[in-house]
Image 1 (cartoon, helix red, strand yellow):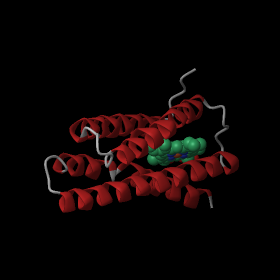
Image 2: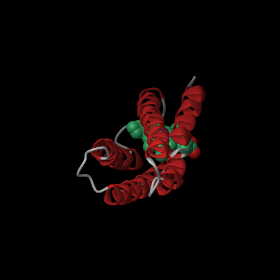
Image 3: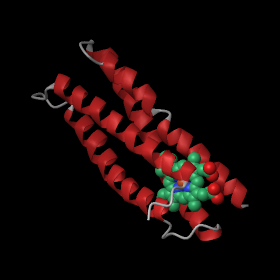
Length: 143
Ligand code: HEM
C-alpha cells in the first residue's frame, strides 16, 4: 500500500512540474497576436495552471498520507523544509498566476508587462518545485 502511495505521489509531482515547461513557450507566443489566437493561447495557459493546481493538491494529500502511514515523522528536517516552501509556493501560485491572468482582459492593462510577470512567476515556481524535488529525493538531514 505504501508503495502505491509513493507511486501516486511521484506521478503527481511529475504532473505538478512538467506542464510548467509548456507554460513558458505558450506565454512567449502570446506577444503581439490577434484576438482569436490570444484567446486560444490563454485557454491553454488556464488549462495548464488548473492541471498543475490539481496535481499540486494530489501531491500534498499523498505526501500527508505518506507521513501518516510511513516511517518518516512529520518533524524530519527535509519534510518541514518542504512544507515551508510549499506553503510559500501555494500562496505564490494562486496570486501570481490567477490574479495576474484576470487582469489581462481589463481595457487599461499592460499586456506586455503582464506576460513578463507571468514568465518570472513560472520560473520562480519551477525553481521552488525543483528545490522541493531535491529535498524529497536526497532527504538531507538539515539539522
Ligand atoms: C506536503 C508536502 C509533502 C510531503 C508531506 C511529502 C512526503 C513525502 C515522503 C514522506 C516521502 C518518502 C517516501 C519514501 O521514500 O518512503 C516522499 C517522497 C517523494 N516526494 Fe514528497 N512530500 C511532499 C511534497 C512533495 C513535493 C512538492 C514534491 C515534488 C516537487 C515531492 C516529490 C517526491 C518524490 C519524487 C518522492 C520520492 C523520493 C524517493 O523516494 O526517492 N514531494 N514525499
